[in-house]
Length: 174
Image (cartoon, rainbow, N blue to C red; front, side, top):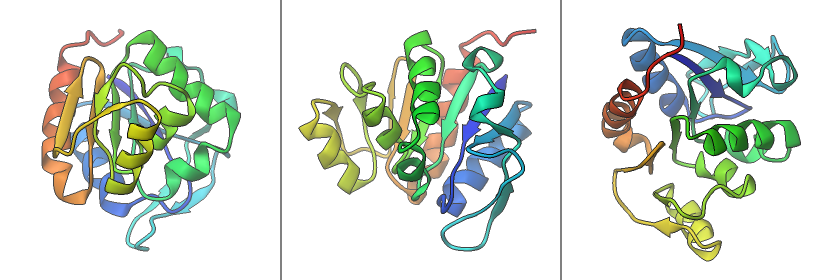
């Protein structure tokens, strides 16, 4: 599958790197999409660096089969930009797999794609989602149709496992 990974400054190191590596190992192609192609991004712990492959202006959701949203401060920084919010919104509207961990659901909230979905997130984001009308549970991983969400770095193994299962159910484009 072709996966878009939306990434901004100060992403959570392990929530990006561990799923990224696992998804690639499973044979998926991942493109890091951000605000500026070629931008060098650093994780909030300073252990992981990433380069934005393509900007939101240079891609279309139709170019991809799934969306991966790592946590940390990245989702909050990205949701201030209309092109990032519209990109996420398109994946949800199309019913494509959306894989969001920790603070990732902040982008779903800004895109108004939190209602009618059961999900989880980082504890402070859970409260925001509940107040906005989402069906929030406090579990290591929640799968609701196309949406896979997890709370925190300790949930990464379950997040990867369930994300791969959801992606396996969708035929990849040739």
